[in-house]
Amino acid sequence: MSAEDLEKYETEAELALYREYRDVVGLFTHVVETERRFYLANEVDVQVRAKDGETWFEVTLTDAWVWDVYRPARFVKKARVITFKDVNVEELAKSDLDVKGLTDHG
Image 1 (cartoon, rainbow, N blue to C red):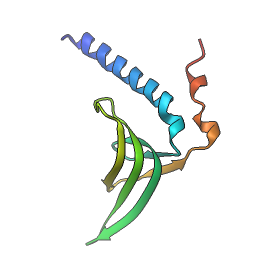
Image 2 (image 1 turned 60 degrees about the vertical axis):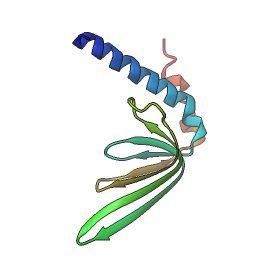
Image 3 (image 1 turned 90 degrees about the horizontal axis):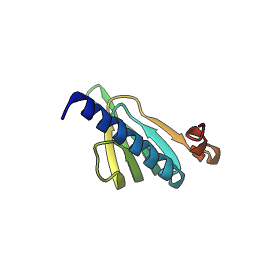
Image 4 (image 1 turned 45 degrees about the vertical axis):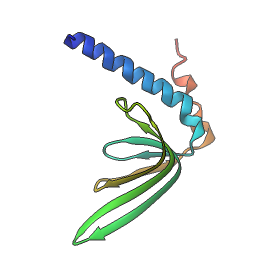
């Protein structure tokens, strides 16, 4: 496989992932971003943990979808994420869920 073929494959996979996101975003109530992943979820619980001068976040997601182009099954019933970096959790407003207009420009 040439570098050009690989780049084309990755571009197509990312576009397919975006299309899947667009199709499923309306099923979820929250967006969660960590330093490694982007998630959609219906329940999110963030706990701040500290021990021996270290602080981290334990994030529990229920009924989630994982933005990961290399993951064959992106729907997850329950996931636990441990991170030492920032966690951003946003509740989606119904107006945020209309992403169809983003791709209908031409």
